[in-house]
Image (cartoon, rainbow, N blue to C red):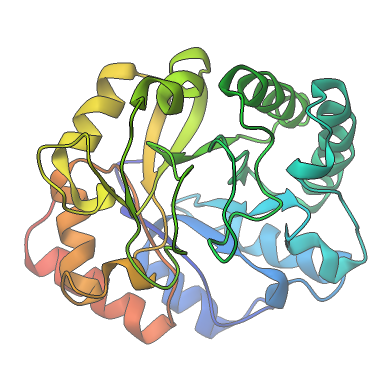
Length: 290
């Protein structure tokens, strides 16, 4: 991890290089920048934007959520990649699709892909997980995730397991509200994390019956301790802390500091540039380690 950066993964308001963008990123000095469909106008414009971001002295990583299916940021550039549920529980099919995806991401200059999802099915409607899960079987999920990660690695793209410790069985979408999961067998949900080694793991916003503390997982030390004990990744990142699941736990500055305090290496904050600057200044005023 680059210790000269702020422990944040942020997004940007602009979609082309500018003095304003350079000044913003130079003040924030984020560990990483995540781009969305709105940032991707053409392939050349995207490559130029990424090149500009990566040319800054503190060398931020540039990431994307590119799972395929319903979470396919590259669709704005005309690409159509199938999602996890369309892979027919077939790791070979996963690898073939992910290789094509990795080639595009590499050509554009991305460093990190926040995928694959290793949550377990079955998926209930209106949970935000529809189409994004490989299987109900933890072993098949693991095999498919390995195939995805290997294909990404073939093109130098770092992968990210998500959403620890698992959103399988949730009844609400954490983008909107805080799910509660009564886990009868937490080991099934942890199985992929215990079998896979990768660069990043993303922690969910969810409350669980197996924990002593029912605080959301992304601001829960118990969850980070479990993840660190498993040791499946180099860097732990939260899901976006602006999501509705955390709205009752403080403002964005408060939950960001709390997530970092409880054990996350990097906090993801998907918000405007002005909000991001407030978060950064709050971290620094609080003398958090950056």
